[in-house]
Length: 277
Image 1 (cartoon, rainbow, N blue to C red):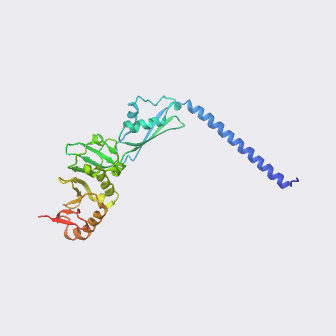
Image 2 (tube, rainbow, N blue to C red):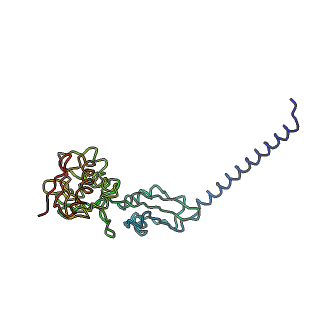
Image 3 (cartoon, rainbow, N blue to C red):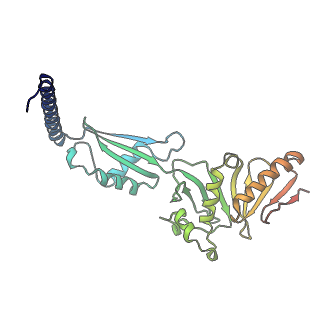
């Protein structure tokens, strides 16, 4: 087989390129091996904690994170990097502090252990007649109150006998799927209601409290207007709120926000109002 000068030149360029790439790959592997070996000998010099969403929620501080680790007799500073099980640390943090939704632990090249913490975000607060109180977060998870921070969320109270200890570890999203109406348990429905309210900018600004009356009906207390909205149950909830919005626009805007004492949405396709005397 005969090769032209151009073919020979092209083959030399390919061979040269292959040799360069082989050397680069070998060099990179060697550097990574050396760095990895050196990293294994590095001891932790500091722990860096970053807490997300710290401007709107203040359940967690940097000291809370370090205390959660110290509770398990874990002192990271001075430990060998390669002796640290980061997944174990993440489990410890979420288990020891119920205000932590997720924790991410990682190593840095300069000998620091980084900890990123995501706080849980409550959307409602339950207050029982016996004074028992707790939150339910945006993921449907029951969470305890904090001694250092109070979240500004919708308050649910009234005739609601749902003790915190009866719901520890429960998730309202999952409870909705297996809710038994005959038991009278309201939390799954209440979570569904609050989630709906928070998803709408107008209703989120307007509804500040949910009250369970003596008949077990759900009542809504608005920020604007001296009236009570009787929702009844969460059945046909979207339709009820659409009717209420239309009544706000066509009725209350004409007759005044304080004309009625109650606005009853319990009955299908109609609104029954009680005038203030």
